[in-house]
Structure formats: C-alpha cells, structure tokens
Length: 245
Image (cartoon, rainbow, N blue to C red; front, side):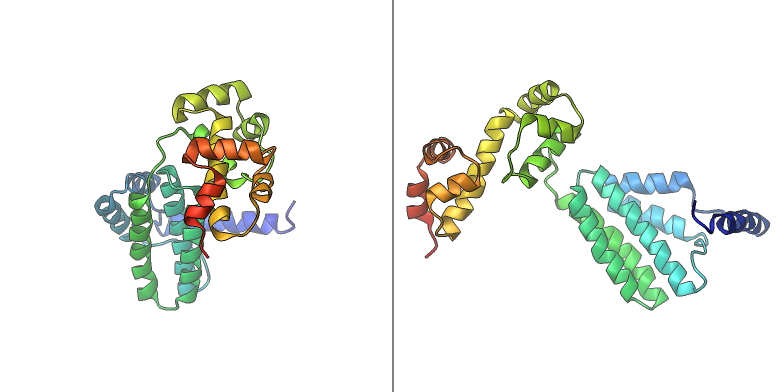
C-alpha cells in the first residue's frame, strides 16, 4: 500500500469537513454530464452555456497556489472534453493527441485571464474537431477491428488475432464485418494492403516483388492479381503512370 495512504485519508476527511463548513459543493455531476452530452453532439452553443453556468461556481482548490489550482482545473476540463469527443466518434488517439497539445499550452500560461480564455478556446476547438470528422458508420466492434487492421497492416493478420483484439468470437466478428462493411475481413485486408502499396509504387524504387513481400502477399503474381482487382491495372502499369521521378 502507498506509504502516505493514512495521511491522504486524513486530508480527505478534513477537506470534506472544511467544504461542508463553508458550504462548498463541487460542480454538479448532472451539469458535467450535460456538458459531455453537448460536446458529444457537437452543440457548441449549448456547451458554452453549460460551461458558463459551471464556472459561475467557485472552482475546487486543487493546489496551494491559485495559478496551479486553475491549471489543474483546466486539465480536468481537458480530460472531460477528450472523453466527450471520443464518445462522439473521434478516434481515441486523435483525441488524446489534441488533449496533449492543450495540456502543454495550459502549462505554458501564467495568467489567470489567459487560462480562463483558453478553457473556452479549448472547448470550441474540441467541438470543431468533432464536427469536421467523418464519423464512421460502423459499430464500435467493427471500428476496433478496422483500426487494428490499419495499424498492423504490415503484420501477419489473422481473423483470430483481430477477434481477440476486439474481445469477440471470430465467427461473430466475421459475420458482423461482412454485414456492416460489405466485404469479408480478408478482402478488406487485401484492399487496404493494395492501397498502402500504391504509395510505395509512387514514392520508392523498391521492386514490385519487394513491395509484394512487404505487404505479405505470398508472391508477386498474387499481388498483381489483387492489385488489378481493386485498381483496374497492374502494379507496373500503375507505377509507369504515377511514379514521381
């Protein structure tokens, strides 16, 4: 157990009593939930209105100095905004990266007014990112599967590995993928590998055989057949047409 657990528990009890004595209450959980929903639905007007109502109340004391306490409060807001846009359909990695940018910005500011303004700028930016996103029409399970495939396209992808990543039965995933995406997982993987191979054909001098092996096609002939299936021409014809000299 953490060696300072007893001290922290004492502080917890003391702070509860102090808050009660001075009549302090944290922002309503219901208000925070409403704010998350407004962000999730990309409703900027409603989100600003709710945040303004929340900020009418005294912020919690999160540090021994005012500026540090405000920074910590904004980091909490940033976390809430991040979770909200993920719930709205933004890829977690994209949301976390935006969060990282704003946390660094929060740490760089030393003015209370600048920090207060940043919270609303942050809210607007998060909602703009969500509004501009082409949200996937697929279920969470299929989005997970597609993300895993895209991120591991150069590895030996199997239905079992993908279904394990999604925590579902492989037969169920296979059926659901075909139902939602319209093609089988194997065909999706081959199509994705062909799309990625196009970059190599345009921007590198790697041989077609090398590119075929890089994307785990069993041989050049199979790669050529798959490429022609999706692009209407062979890899050589594509390279001759598009290669950047």
